[in-house]
Length: 334
Ligand code: SF4
Image 1 (cartoon, rainbow, N blue to C red):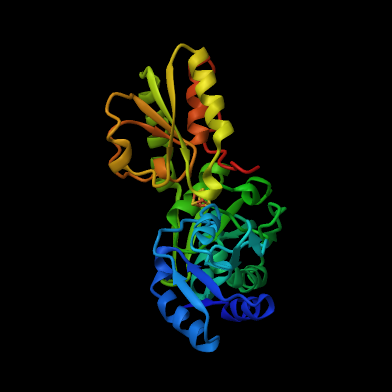
Image 2: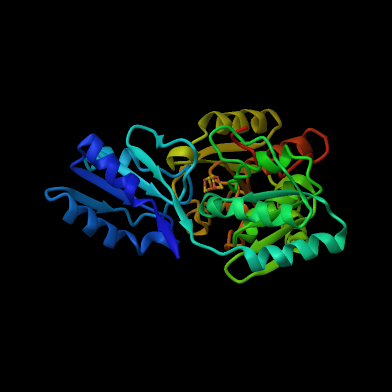
């Protein structure tokens, strides 16, 4: 079960006198929002609440502009929290955490770590499992492991990662990592960013999975995409239109550099970077998308190679006659 920090929402409404607010959340939590909207409207008569049905993928994906368009006082973005309470002019980040019992999964994880001889372990997770970290650490410590503290990225909590920010594991001297949650993508991202053994610890099912096989597949796919793109002459440089994914300066840099290297490069802009839109541009050979580095990693039916920002940098390095470099340095904010 997921617990939304409704008390924070109520106190923000009361403190600020908000009369019209929006609610947004990732798909897995979206079904809870209409009920929450009714609860707010019943509790604060005269208040209007909009449920945003648009996808929201992360802290990068806010609705400040939409809030202005609808003339809302605030938007509560639920389920993508950091230590920063407010992002932009109107969006408040609201914590939503799974109520999970980590005992069984951590006992299995301890056995796995012991069987490999690892003693110094890093604990990593996303915001939805932040509350489980203290118990997980206590279990590991009691089992004789050293839980290594890593320097958190500014505004993220100890051990928190995003799909585009692996600062915590990259700045840790742990021998191996445990990722608490269900996202293979995040767990494999830790492995790919650090090349250290990483295990997905799923507290819902009590399962522990070594992510190496999946991570190696992702690495090969990413490298293959870069080499396929290298055969091209015409590149689309896609700047994301989601609020926190809009890296125009990076787009301009790619256009200039690729042009200097004798390629055709065109700036494009898109909100939902999906095959349905990209595949319409048939006479371009490959695309570099600057929105979210997760997009090229999912096999979603793109007809032409589509590269993330670090993959795009690798492509430029290859055109310059250099090696491919670190293609999973996904700390695009760092
Ligand atoms: S850019 Fe992608 S990985 Fe990063 S926060 Fe946004 S949705 Fe998550």
